[in-house]
Length: 162
Length: 242
Image 1: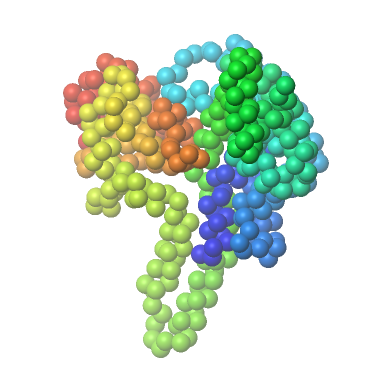
Image 2: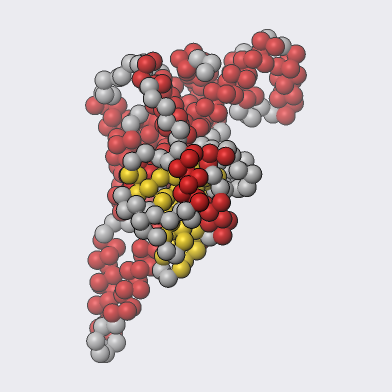
């Protein structure tokens, strides 16, 4: 298998996580990743070996998301989770907790403006440095820093201390 | 006065050393600022804990196929035809089958490389069974006794539809489900646990949603409680299947 495909496959788990954050639901996220794969394969000549494949692919995922989901208009946003449902029934399986928290976090992030959410995803979850994240989004570093600060403050307020 | 952007840049490790030291001192001297820094650190941790399991899930087959389209398989036929044309005699079936197998292995590299390199599993008679440390934990540990001291943690114990006793486990590099059979603990599913940025693995307690989904798909009835787990152990984990 060629290095390009190998690199792409190795990055799929991270790209799925990023797409999940952008799209806000599992099914949409995989559609988004599939589109991004198709675009990446068509545009593979534009990727320069020696530069970061991950940044290049993240940009493709993000642009695919802008072109489709954002243009269509995001699905009706579900408002805050019903407090009652969150604690109904006890399940000893720890993963249930993680899954519920993903739902809670996703709902909170849905309420942020898109341009803040994508910055939070790249820096706080995907672990990109400011410079790489700004390059992926093609925005100045100062813009990135201010969106990151506003998004973070808003998200903390939405999620509270717990 | 330290503004938000500077505080966050410090939290994210984006400041040059000298400035970082200045902010660190300021945070240490100001309880309100320290609380704020702590809240944002916790927020980052919570986001990572919520989203990381997605990166630990197996990648859906259709996405792998999108990278390596079926056209590749058709190409194998072309290769075979070309080879047959070059070498007199009947086409060598083993040759292209090996090539097809190699392609499949390529698609599965993520799993296979992982499970063999971590020493979690071994092959016996073509079956994937739990290797010594995992098998030992599956044999001896009771989840009801609390967290184990060793690297392998046992999660749920339950029966599958065939009556076999199955247990979920979490090792540092992977989590999975094994069911007891005649050959020992047969590994039914294995999920890689993503490595963290600092090189460590996620805590064993934070099970993968993909693992949970798998358990949900094979479990018959409810997970065993402490008493049922203990009596299953006393019976040597034998179920209808072993």
